[in-house]
Amino acid sequence: MLNSAEVEKLGRELVAALQYVNAWRGKTVVVKYGGSVLEENGVGTVLEDLVLLKQAGVHPVLVHGGGPEITRMLKALGRQTRFVNGLRVTDAETMEVVEMVLAGRVNKALVGMLSTLGARAVGLSGKDGGLLRVRQLNEALGYVGEVEVADPSILHVLNREGYIPVVASIGLGPDGRSYNLNADTAAGALAVAMEASKFILLTDVEGIYGKGEDGPQLLSQLRAAEAKELIAAGVISEGMIPKVEACLRALEGGVQSAHIISGKIPHALLVELFTEAGIGTMLIP
Image 1 (cartoon, one colour):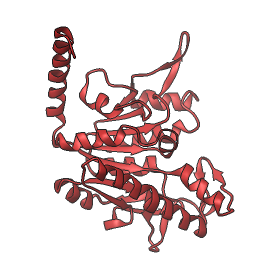
Image 2 (spheres, one colour):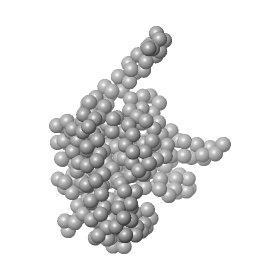
Image 3 (cartoon, one colour):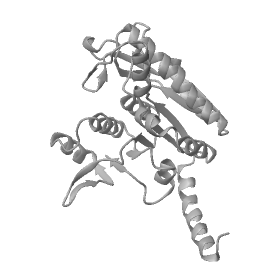
Image 4 (tube, one colour):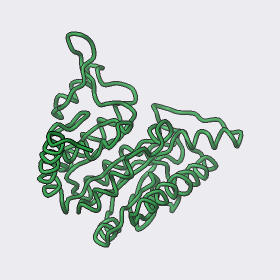
């Protein structure tokens, strides 16, 4: 049982959180859940956070990857995986596996878990309702696309009717074929198209690190111009580059703020949205 001091402290925290709940009611938040987090940590408390956000009147949209699961399935089928600049080379047969894993297994598993938590969720890919129309990135990568047009009409309908949309990062090409998309860039494009108030990347790191006096230091806030400088200087490198670039494109498209936070921290979304401190790195225009 809580003593009087603990009750008072908890009460103050709940009252403080209430102002943030009221501030976010009716607003759209696009959340990208990385395949690496799914692989390492399961869904953790992230889905619980999404359900609570929806019940609090926020409109969350979940966009997911599933790279490790795709690689495992390809290996089971005796097919090798090759990457160029972090993008999976995707021939026609590989694309069939990608679509089966992302739009089938991973997407529907997330929808099912949200349903067991009491939410109404609908699984989609970028092909549904013309959500993500793409062009081929380059011939060497095969069926890998980049977003040309994001039409969020179907997402607005689902939000309005009380559903949580769960979007697999697959796009529709001009030839009617499916194309593999980088989930970070797909999520960023949807955040812009939906005029989201916030774009959150849940990943397997705490955020963006800069150079501090005693070694790497987590940057709690970063302006877009500063982020570009860190990329040019090589401080932001490798797998963090596409994540930061997706955030920068979202900011340039009118999203108010973008965040890179660890999906392995329990209730990371609630802490980010409903507390003053927040976690991870926030990027602003």
